[in-house]
Image (cartoon, rainbow, N blue to C red; front, side):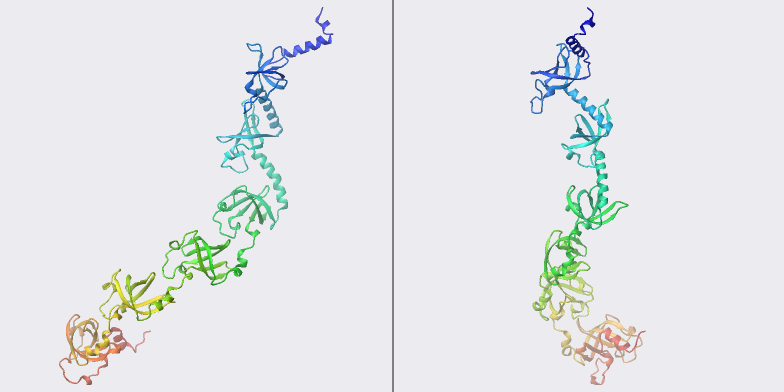
Length: 561
């Protein structure tokens, strides 16, 4: 009987077709099968072939060790081998799933559709992503801007665009940036359409720089400059903001053509300087914190956005502050007195020393004029000696008040730093902060007794201290000098004084004029030994003894043009 005769039997025809299918199972293909049983090592699957297939049970194990397969489940499997030595077909569930995913990804790539996946790890140049198979996400494609810390994305799920696909090599390259750019462009057109100067908008801090923060307004970034963040001092934007923070900002400027937006945050609040004269007044004591130091003073924050300056000259009554850092440090809490307020210029002048009583005001009561004081020589100059009386308060003893003697040419001739000295208070000027002292005043003025010691008509020995064209200064003792006019040197006329006298020469002189109140002695050499009454010898030129007096007397009527 021919085989075609049996083909007429429907039952036979169905069996024949089923058998024919089993003969067409080809290695490398994906077929549908039914799970028959699950044992210790393998899952047995009916794939409508003459032999069942087996899959290692490990391919169905979950993370916690449980199996995700049961008898009766229908699954897609990959044919590894027609039959092994046990007569079973070797199958793989994992390969079937992987191949199906590759096909889905290829289709998504061709249609430019998105794929979803979880970022699983960090690799050189980017991140790995599980989209059913392993894919690569370059660092430059993670976000719209470069990302420093890629690790923060690990474990997060996103949608991606497939930008490179090679099934043969098993390479898949993804991009999240391309998706974000597309979304950003859509938002940008919406944002630009409604943006207006003066409006308050919501934004998210996208990036922080030294000079400000870039705020994402929805498809377009605006710059919030550091000077528009707060009325208070801001050293760096990171003090106020962090990336991802939500903020409400005001649109200050908007250039639609260049797509540039300038934003402000402090403009949402009232400028504290608007009510400054209500809160503060001159003479008021205030407290604040040192926020900045300059060569000329310290800036004190009184409240957010309001700072005052303590000038270096207002830091101490007595100490000469060379730099504010010698007295204050940034962060110090200080108390001060308001000296001046300029609301228009946004300036407040403060004084720190005014918190304490001015020691110069107390000085006049502590050291009245004429009282004696003791102190240490702190500094020596060519015009006098500074003597430390109290902490930060020095008194000046002028060179003319060091000694009654005219021999003192420089203070360092008789004093050195550190010497303990006594002096008399001559004058105190609190406004100019001047404290005048005298050392010679501790002794009696020798001129007060000059009439007794150097009476008119008395004869004494002296030393020629200075020669002048019209006379000589003769030193009688350490403190008393007299003037010897050229006409009183000899009976005969002296044409050149240098021919008659030498500096340092000891001479005998007679006192012919005494005027103590003007500190003047008139001397004569030619009258020594003359016992006649000197009242007939009133010689006005013999009076002046100082060089200044002599110059005035000789040239006083002349005018210099």
